[in-house]
Image (cartoon, rainbow, N blue to C red; front, side, top):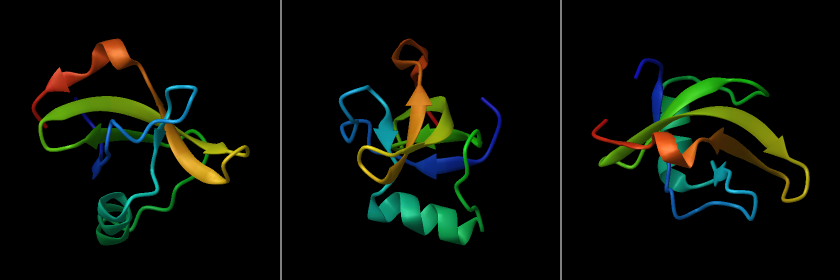
Amino acid sequence: MTGTTVYADFHNADPSGRVRLNLHGTAEDLKRLSIELCEGLKLVLSDGELSVEGVVRFSSEEQVWVAEIDWNEIVDGE
């Protein structure tokens, strides 16, 4: 997997299966890497054990940034 890796909690998904990017660990990584979230941004999401590529979207329903992922593509490792 290539791309910038940020922390995500795969248990923090919305009803559509998109991973919310609103946790403290995610915010710390984004700040440290000087990344500003925007529509269509591609990131690698990792919880330290599992990783997957995702595309950033803004959830107008919840007013929070999320990442669309393919749950079947999650792999072990960072």
